[in-house]
Structures are given as C-alpha cells and as structure tokens.
Image (cartoon, rainbow, N blue to C red):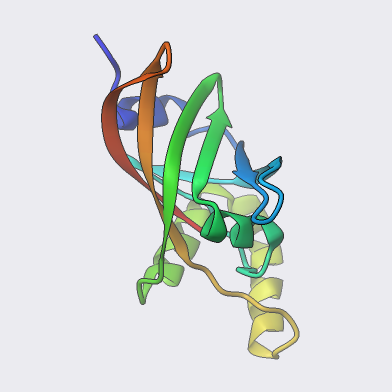
Length: 146
C-alpha cells in the first residue's frame, strides 16, 4: 500500500534539515540548498528571514522543486503564497522545533525591527508528484512556507 504524503512526512519530521533542489531562473541549472523545515500534517514549511535569497527568487520564477530528507524524495511544483499572519504561525513552529536557536531568532527579530535586517516570510504551495518509472500515479498537495 502506498504511503500518503502526510505519513511520509511524519516519518522524517524529526530531521533537522532537508535538501531543496531548485532551478536557476535564467540558466535552468539545478541548485541545492540545505534548509530548516517543519513538517505539519501534509504540509512542509521552510522558514527564512530573507525572501530575497536566490533560491527563493529561483523557486518563484521556476517552481519545479525536489525535497530530499531522511531517504524520502518529494518532487513538486511550487506556487508562492503571501497569506497575512503566516509569519507568526511559522515562527512559533520554528521556535518549538529549533528551540536551541531561539536566542539567534530573537536577534534576527531585533535587527529587523531596527531596519538592519530583512526578516520576511512567504509561502510556496507545492503539488507533489509520486512517480513510478516516470509515470505520475498519485498527486497530493503540500504547502512549503518560506
């Protein structure tokens, strides 16, 4: 029996980081970035304090992505979302999972309040494709927050 996205994500939710493969917005060349993540049901959140990072710009322009973590791989298409109120919800999940980094997060927030650092989040909604020998056999939605 095939596992659902939520079941697969639950198995890897205790991992600290995942690899996000994204594609250059001009070159199409694949790039990998290791980033924190939060698995929440059938959703994944990728927190960042800087929506101007190259990988964020790349995913906005070329939404095809791959997530690799704990022996699991998820391919999908990302759609940028900008829902109000999501920042605090994501940051509270980050604080629970990455509690050891709370002092650093507090400094980031202070620097943002002083206008020294950009500290903004957004979201990517990813349509996951489960493939067997190149054929799409199942689709589920997965939200990736930035």
